[in-house]
Length: 317
Image (tube, rainbow, N blue to C red; front, side, top):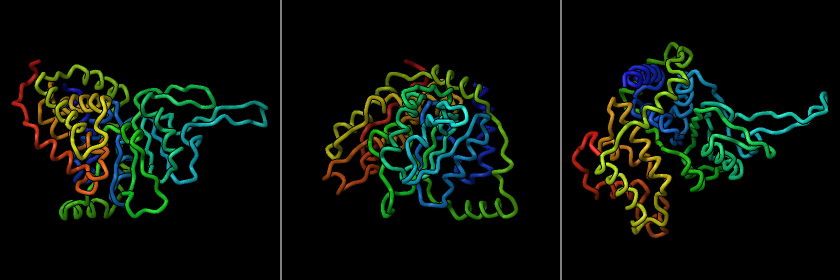
């Protein structure tokens, strides 16, 4: 476990020099990439979503691409296109920005549903299809999508359930505390710390850590606790659509990755409890009556509070 403890800690500390007071958020990003998952960041403009994504990409030695979504962005602008070269009199492939390691999908809710759906195959299967030709994307592929809250915004297109389910986590970046904001202003008073970030973790190390994640164990009672939370989302009277089996699998992988990052060889129930809101909230669809009374956050919070947390069982199975 020394590789994860030293390498990831160094990368997290480096990002912390740019993104002040968001240590938990940074850890969740590393949890996601080790789980082969993707992240949706949501908050008001100017809260640091894009800068967080850029900082994460800079500490990796892989390729970084960015798509600034607007309503006129086409699916071919995302995946690539075959174009006719008049000089050679032949069609040539122009690869899209999805052929990368870290993809920043900025303001994804400003893209049309057709363009949003062009990311589905990419995020799920690590490949894209251009004019019938399937192109594999070398791992890791990590999509960090950002969006501003939909409410009150003109020209936005809420992500459909099928698209939301492709994201391991949906994270909300809150306003910083007073002390954190003072620290931010002081940090940026004379310089832009993003420019000083250098590579601190390699693609090979990421892939090696993913293999280590697979070896993290779950005790039977911890796995049962995870499934109890998932299954209650399907039985709740305020929920029309609960968490899928795919969501349960991604939940398990996230708990394994978190345990690795914390230097453990096994998942503890607290891993499950603390990650549950980030994994489950965006995967449920409330009924019409439920949406009047509660939010997704409130429903998941009630479910978590209703299930007793099992006594930590360590690595026993």
